[in-house]
Image (cartoon, rainbow, N blue to C red; front, side, top):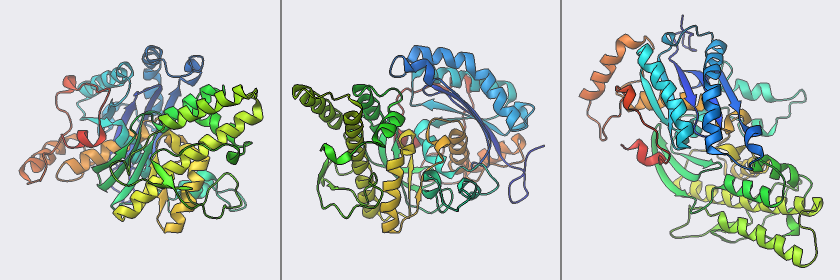
Length: 440
C-alpha cells in the first residue's frame, strides 16, 4: 500500500541511487519533497590517508556497499519490494566514471527487472532540489524540530526561516561543492540559465588544498572551519579573486561573520564567474614568506589565523557575487547548496546579507548538503513531472503510457525528454553540464 500525501491521494514514490563520488547512497522520496528514507555509507575514513578521493578505491567500495544501502533504504521506507514503487532514479553524471557505473548498473538492473521507469538525474540538479526536501509532515516541521528549548535556532535552522524552498521564481541558486562553483538562475522547475562558474578550482577544492597546506586534515571544509574558530581573520590579508575594493560596513558582534562583503564584484565578462586558484596560491606564498621570516606557518595559532583569513576571503567572494546576481535579476528567493553550503560562516554571512535585502534564503539541513540520494529522488520527480505534459500519475505504471502520449501530442517550445525506455542504453557522463543536459 502506497503512503499518502497531505491531500490524501497516493504518493508518487521514487527509489533514488547516488554514487557519483565517494558516498554510496539510496533513498525513497515521496512526491519529490518528503524523505521516507535516506541512507548514506561514507568512505571518508578510507580516503583520509590519501588526502583526497582515490577513484579506484571509491568505485570498489561502492560495489561492496551498494546492495546493503539500497536494502536498508527500502526497509526504512517500509517498502517490501521495488515493484511497490513508481520509479527509479539514478545519478548518471557528473562524477567519477567508475563510481557512477556502479549506481547506474544497479539502477538499470532494478528497472529492467521491475518494469519501472528509470530516470537519469544530473548530480548538480540534485543539489538544487535538496532545497525542496523535508523529512517531517510539512516543509516547516524540520525547522521547528531544530530549535532548542530556549527558542533559539541552530545555523541550519536560521537560514531556513520560511522552511524549504518555495515555487516562487526566478530563484538564484549558488551551487558550491568540491567539484563545482556555479551561479544558476532558476526560471522555473527544471528551467535553468547558467550565469557563471569557476574558471579554475572550485571552492571546495580550494578548502581541501589549503587544509592540506596547513596540515589540518581531510576533508578540508570541516577542518578549515574548526581551525578558523580560534583564528583572527584580520591578521593576514588575502585577495578576493574577481572582486574589486569596496567599503566595509560596521562589523556585527559575531567576529567571524561579516555583515556585508568587504569587496564588490567586478563588472564585465567575469562578473558572475569565480576563481579560487589564486587564493590558494596566495596562502602558499604567505606560508613561504612566514618561513623566510623564520616563523612557523603551521604553528597552531598561526595556522588558525591563516585558516580564518582564507575562509573569510572565500565567503566574501561567494556572498558578494551571489548578492550581485540576486539584485541584477530581481530574484524572489536565494538557495545555497552543495557540500560547502554546510560552512557555518557562509551561512551566517549569507543570512545577514540577504535579510538586509529582504530576500528569503534557503540552505539544506546539514545532512542534505553533502552527496545523498534524497536530492536525486527530488530532482527526478520534478524532471519527470515538468518534462512531460502533466505531473506523474500516482496510480502507477498503467497510466504512464497515457501520460507519454499526452506529452507527445501537446505542443512545446522544446523537445520533451521522457524517462529512458531502453534501460540498457543508459550511460554515465563523467562531465555533464547542468544547463546543457536540461536542453537535450
